[in-house]
Image (cartoon, rainbow, N blue to C red; front, side, top):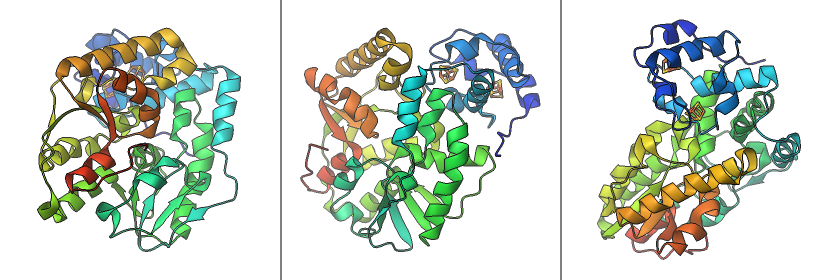
Length: 342
Ligand code: SF4
Ligand code: SF4
């Protein structure tokens, strides 16, 4: 069985304890943060195990390459501390269960992964993707299973992720461009943290979009838009990809409006909170986030994840802010008219 690589000495000598000091849902100072992480590592009780809302942010806050949230998750599972009612957890686990069916395009050496997000099949169109399509794959057999770490469950991805890696390897691809942020995080953060090897090159679609837009720069007409960007929880596991957001915006003449809940302070869409911690937490997080977008003067909210888009599209629209996926925004910049129902 795969085990999380974690070195308590790194926490004992940590200069800042940023994992918990920066946590937006609990209050710890530098010393108590370090102490709690060491207690958690040693299997002792900690309020963190009860109160963590699984926002994933401490995975980014820790600059020492440790995996504080993955450790919290392991210890919750060891102690049987549930984050959601059993029925909800079972329902989610059932959704991602492999069914022995795959959906494939004409697979080449480079392929697009749509993971298990059907909306991605409709949104990846036009000149931006013409050098890769029709090489794509989709379905439960390629589903990253990262979502179960919201449910204090490591067992499922330890079983399923190696099978998913093997399913992709058997396609014979050398490089995979992941259109689902969370899938990219599975192969670049979760798998390496547990010692799983990845036999293909992984590319986040933000990097791909940036490179394609650069190649197609003669087609770009600056959009002159003011926008807010909605950062999903999964992006905390793959912060390297986030660096492409301002680069893409610069390239297409879009201004990211300064606001309180952006970059490291971003708030997630809140949808997972409702199932696990109740309506009030979801409402609080969504209201603060939407107020902040509105006050920034953004005319559009740019989404990365369709989970966030499902949760927030109607709410941002009710504030007079247009919901747009990053791919649609980039297509608009090269003169294409995307179907906005995505
Ligand atoms: S997990 Fe990272 S930030 Fe937190 S105490 Fe350990 S080394 Fe420091
Ligand atoms: S996952 Fe979020 S809520 Fe949980 S400890 Fe980390 S930063 Fe805090």
